[in-house]
Length: 233
Ligand code: ZN
Image 1 (cartoon, protein in one colour):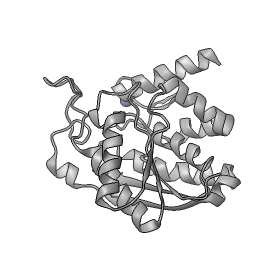
Image 2 (cartoon, rainbow, N blue to C red):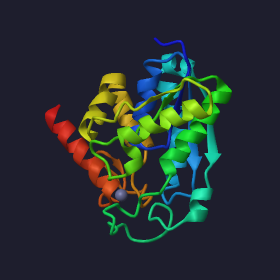
Image 3 (cartoon, rainbow, N blue to C red):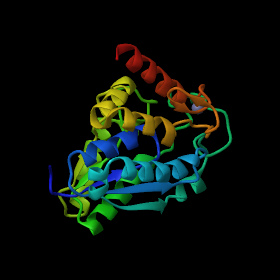
């Protein structure tokens, strides 16, 4: 158990919720931060609260370690606009090979804001669920980007933050397995019921792997990972 504190970027999606369990398994003091950037799937801001409540109720040991939660306004991203993650446009691949769900600067901004919170709260470790194995091609999810941001934050804030990316080299099937290892079927069921990944914000249609349209890139990844994991189980 690490006595230094950790801050987890909790969006309300499967990946960051799994990272929260990962952090609670390792750090004696864990706080969470989320961001409101007027995302189409704003339902994730609601389910992240549900997830925290359910987690506290089901895992008393983790509840003791779990501290403050905050949601910061990152609405400047919406003001810049022109992304399918915020605007009501069809999801497609652009000329540069990137999906138009890419929000330029988003993860760099989130890590910077998180580090500012961690600085004020005296938390050395920052945990984010970005992943380059099984992802949508976002360059700010890459390991090199996160490492470069860590250097910049530490220089710019005269700090020794450690950025953790527990999911960087695992695929979605392994993410489900990690959750089962950390919190058993109780945690897996909580992830199914109280996290949201669908880009289109569909939180009505329930599948074995959770809620979503079942068609968008985020749903496709989540469903395929669930299928591989449950087959191998
Ligand atoms: Zn979807």
